[in-house]
Length: 256
Image 1 (cartoon, rainbow, N blue to C red):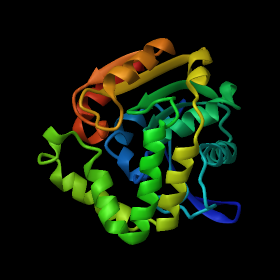
Image 2: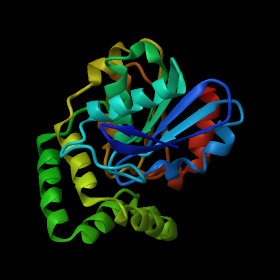
Image 3: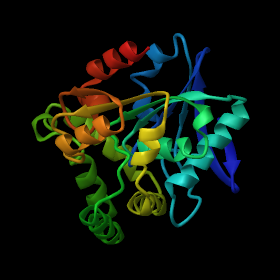
């Protein structure tokens, strides 16, 4: 399905019936990343997926796709579907958007599940890396995408998941470069939402991976504890839905 937000097409899909679960993908991904989970989740739930602006089949809205802007798009989908509240599962950047949504709309969030994600803002070093990435994209976009996606996986699993890595790269090569850059700017400039997560008084969960090359496990574990999140640590890298699908699925069953 497609609707227009600020005259730009936004792609979303729905599956099943029951309590709403909104799945929010990460950077250089699209709604297709959730395919392995949808058959199970949609047995007893109304599952919604979206392609964020500048990713998948959705168009580019602005020079910067802030987390707040993408949260607005999410809210628009809920309104169009007539859904008053949902559980949100956000992978990486999707977790940033889920928290940006929970800030103005806590009453619309049934539960928050952050998958390989954090409420923290970028460090100064990470911001500098984002700025470097913007320059690399201008010079050699395919090289940047190839490197960025490969670096999401634990070193120990890159060979095992080589085919999946190539599929992710192939899809990301089709995204508009202005959309990729807009997301990088949005992530670089996002604010710290640790207090938002800490003060969220309904179910909140974090799923972290031991070898995540993006999120240092010890630091993120402390954040989970400080925010009062139920925490699950699993094997693998930043792409837990690919590297450790069984553990993710089992934990989501445990959450219910």
